[in-house]
Image 1 (spheres, rainbow, N blue to C red):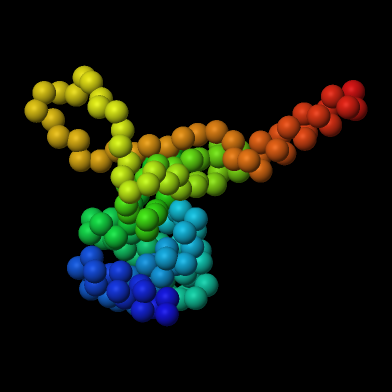
Image 2: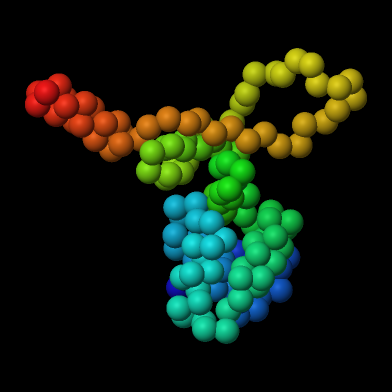
Amino acid sequence: MLSQSSYAALVAHGIKPTVQRLAVMGYLLEHRCHPTADEIYTAMSRVLPTFSKATVYNTLSLLEENGAVVRILVDERRTCYDVHTAPHAHFYCHQCGRLHDVQAGDTLSLPAVGGLPEGSRVESVSLTYRGLCPECLARQQADSHATFANP
């Protein structure tokens, strides 16, 4: 079924299905954890030994150009990919590194931004909240309590 979903997703975005493209799209559909290109490459090279890193990057670029994925710039060293292309925000835990979707209902509306050059047209907005996820926050609080309990 996953290969059918991958095939349908590629065709819906006007992308010619190839074994490599089906594999990358399948991975993204199955692993909705916002993987990086390196994570995809590592997983795919186990299944398809002839898979190259360049193929992953080229495929991700093609998927992005055709609207099948969204590229998320977490920081200067980490770029993730998301098959959930409807407008939504993300929450990034700076301790564990996980990226979570933040649902905003049917539409994501942001306040108007002043100071844009006159005549500009905003085509996309990327909103990422940064902080600690519940698990990391609980761990941090437990560590803090343990430190005070055992001076």
